[in-house]
Length: 560
Image (cartoon, rainbow, N blue to C red; front, top):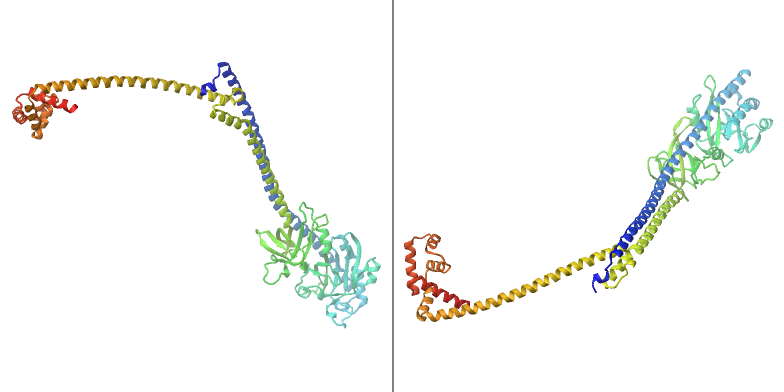
């Protein structure tokens, strides 16, 4: 069975194949266009997810920086407001003290050991202290006079009379408590004593008070170290405003208190970051050799807050900066949690190098965000891979399998219905069948030519054999006509010819004439006659005719 017998179609069937081919081409175009559209859509979705992930990371760092800016501005603004109000309070209190001293014609040193004068002074400034406290978001306000009610007591040099009024809580700012001062004055003004009330304030509880008093200047605000207020668990930061008389006498100090509870509520930040932690750290008390507080954050020397939802992850113990990712970005860790965030110095009450702010989130939250973004990207790629596999499987079943089936049928020389085949393959096989037919025709023509050539060769060989037999007969006849001894002498004489004589002999045999031999050998006629005589003598002949006859007989014998 030949290809022609398997794939032989009439013109009507070929027309159907053409229509099917065109239909398949359009169908394949539609499928490929759909596949390309799906892959392009999937690619764009994946690209969008990747760009979104990168944008979210950039947004995360931008959010941290924006949160730092807002937090720093909030803290600076709050303390600038306290500073402005504190300066007003210090001027007002100074005027009230000076008026009292002038009205009673006494010096400031004379109020020591005078309970009456100290009480009168506290009564005169109480409303001012209370009013300024209620105007601010601070947790307390105070006035410490550089005087004591009893100079004869032990430690009286560090005991100072005055007023210290505190707010009970951020949620009830109008409810005030008297932490230091004369309780009768507080009760008269509806301010009840604090549960840890004492009459006077001991300056040894205020870190660095003696050094600050020595360097204090009129109208210059200072900030205390962060410390735990005696008798309480509150960490506080004090704004200190020195009081001086016109003659330069140190009268005392007034100011505001910001404790950790008020700081945590008043400085809480609106944010989209989860578990945000904001820290204000006093780097003035950094351990010796530590780089401005950037290596460790001591919870005793810092205030912290979180987001406005009221929840944040406060550092558990000392917070250590384990790695600086950039100029501002840091990795921190305490004894429980690792944090990722940024840090920068904050200007507080005009002090540029005193405090440092930290904006932190738990590192696991950042890693969870990155993992979620990575999972989304991997999911997109998995969907793309599945889509590609499904498309490959579909096109394999739709186009490749029929082609392979047709090839297998062709290999096995099976009769195939063209309608069941891929039209392009059927047309290709038809073309191959036509090529095979052409080759068979060419092969038949070649075989016919070979057969004719064989017949011609047989005829030529027969003629050659006939000529050969005729030549043998003529040689034999010629040989009978010559003298055997003369012919033998001729044969023996051939070996005695010189090289030149042999050359001339052969030229005669090739049919050359005398003139042609002289020109070819470039010799004279006399020389040629000389050689001819030698040839005749050696061969035992006496004419050219005899030479040619003997040579013909010799060639005939060689042919046999």
